[in-house]
Amino acid sequence: MKDILTRLGDIGIIPVVAIEDAADAVPLGGALMAGNLPCAEITFRTAAAAEAIENMASAHPEMCVGAGTVLTVEQAKTAKAAGAQFVVTPGFDAAVVDWCLANEMPITPGVMTPTEINMGLNKGLSLMKFFPAEAAGGIKALKAIGGPYVDVTFIPTGGINANNLADYLNLPMVHACGGSFMVKKDLINGKQFDEIERLAALAVEIVKSVRR
Image (cartoon, rainbow, N blue to C red):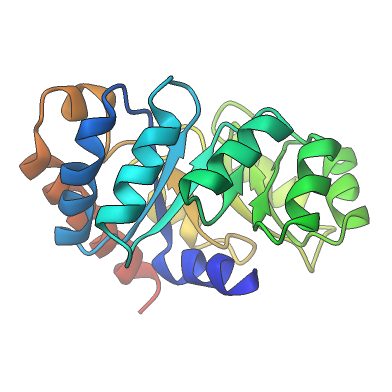
């Protein structure tokens, strides 16, 4: 379980994808791989999510493909069956966390307050998603909230872009960041996979500039 989460930390930036046509998952995965970004969090914000996860995971087995915006245990089960290697939730749902832990599915639940961080710690979790990062106060808030939790690391998500990615990655409590700026829905729908590859490569270079 920890190996997948460690790999996400090594990669440093996780593309957060909302995909409407599952057929786009294979070329999308190819574009991310070509940009040296071998991971994706495919969110359950669309009906195509499960099929997209299956398509991408099957076509690109070297990628770390996960499921995001998982709101229920049923969605977690669906994600696992489709081939997802990790689960991300927007908030802290004890039932989803318990199911993932019982089924050896790596999970990073969404937290925004010290109370929610404590809930994660009580489940044995030390890596959590800070969401929505920018709307919740950004770097200043994460420093303040994360400060007392010296053994907890975070994946800030929400409002992360090419301009602030390095600033987040410079924080010692940041494991990786989640972002959609390289995989915006209009780029996917427009089949602009060359541009996605370019933006993925840009994101990777930003990570490398911080974590040499």
